[in-house]
Structure formats: C-alpha cells, structure tokens
Length: 103
Image (cartoon, rainbow, N blue to C red; front, side, top):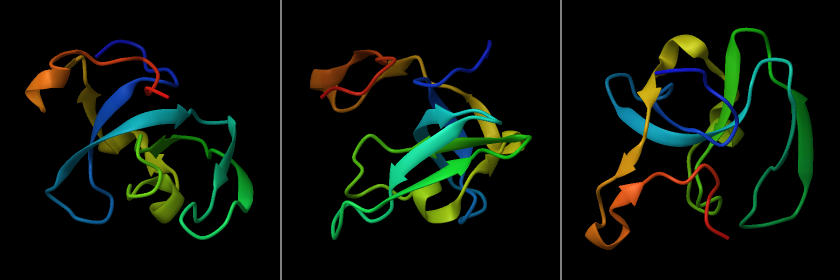
C-alpha cells in the first residue's frame, strides 16, 4: 500500500456498516488539525479537531452527500484496507485517481 498521506483515496471498512467497503479521501493523519464544515447543506459553520493517535480523518469528495468522518469521527488505521490508484466507473472517468479532488 505504501505510505499514506493527505490527498490519497483510501479503501476502508465502513465504521457504521460492518462488512461494507467504502472509498474516501484521506484529509488528516494522527496529530493533524482538521477544520471541516459541520453541515454543508444547511450552514457554513466549521469545527476544528485534532486527529487522535492511531486514527485518520476521511471525507468524500462530494461534501453535500458523503457519509464520512464529519458524521462518524476519525477512523482507526485498522479499518484501512488499501489505497485506490485507478478509477474504473463511470467509464468516462477511467484512469488514475487524482491526489486532489477536482474543483
């Protein structure tokens, strides 16, 4: 899998639905300070956290529809299954995964 760093897209076991696998973008590593929009659909209120030891902060690229660390908090390293390198669907987007989301 190699060294993980913010911007990588990781494959994780869902912390809320055991047995389900999801992909999210890695935003913060343990000890990092992360500021995020709490409820982007209804306000621009932000909150800042420090990612606890042994955990990472993940978010989906679509902040309006993603269930991610903003909902369930930092996730333990143990839930990380791997790193995504290629996007296969939709077909028009086939290719390497970008290290940063498209604007």
